[in-house]
Amino acid sequence: MKRRKMGRSKDELSTERWDKQVKTKKKIRNTRQMVRICFGTLFAGCFAVLFLMPIILTITNSFMAASEISANYGQVFATSETGGKVYISERVNLKFIPDMVSFSQYITVLFKSPEYLLKFWNSVILVVPIVAFQLLVAMGASFGFTRYRGRIKEIIFFLYIILMLMPYQVTLVPNYLVSDWLNILDTNWAIWLPGIFSPFAVFLLTKYMRRIPTSVMEAAQIDGAGEWQIFQKICMPLCKGAMCSVAILIFIDYWNMVEQPLILLADSEKHPLSVFLSKINAGEIGLAFAVATIYMVPPILVFLYGEDYLVEGITYQGGIKG
Image (cartoon, rainbow, N blue to C red):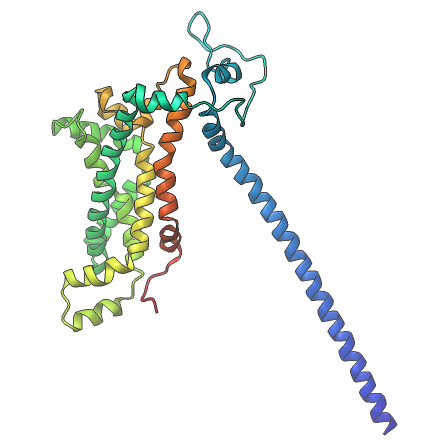
């Protein structure tokens, strides 16, 4: 009986030591994990501050008076007598908080100078049709690439990928020549047509649509559904997140376009605001900050509205949701 009691006490001691070792290891793991999370959060926070600093600087400086802006940044935009840039020997004063809040820049942009608003609406007129019709073309082409496989279609899809990998500067000359042949230079169609038939949305939506199980489409086909019903009732609802993600990316891409209007639109009155921002004179620095702030509003609103769809479109793997 004593040996049994001694044996039990040794077992209890060993289990207690084992429990202590396990708890110690868990504490060490939790501590290491907390340290990693803290360092990761600090690292991400530093990068977030660096990325947000120009945006915050632009917004706050748009409420500065013209005299205060020229006093802080005038030497950056100053020019010499020969027309060249001046060497900056002093430090530029980056101010995030204005001494006195002024709305004079916004009053000039919105009421006194309609030229800025005209350029803003030029951007809207050029970008919105590209986003809408590129999605329509991409959905039809993606459904065709998904439903019908074959060597010819795979070659065409491979050519789509090659075109997507090419920078726009490579295809700019062919687009100019084709636009000249179609007599659409210096019109909005010279911007719309290359944008509507861009391969970017076709590639992303095809890859996304091919994740949908074929058994779902085959079951609908057995139930008597036609191709249009499969496209309308199955593919479009399941690709809603991907369509919103692609729409956001297309909007941001073409909202910031510069090369296309400069080459394909000779009339400066048809240029979007993205081109006009680079042509603001040195004496209108305050207006540049105000116009840039207004110009940032639509992409920010589009992103905030479609943020959930953007995440869903990236992470969702296809299939039927329960």
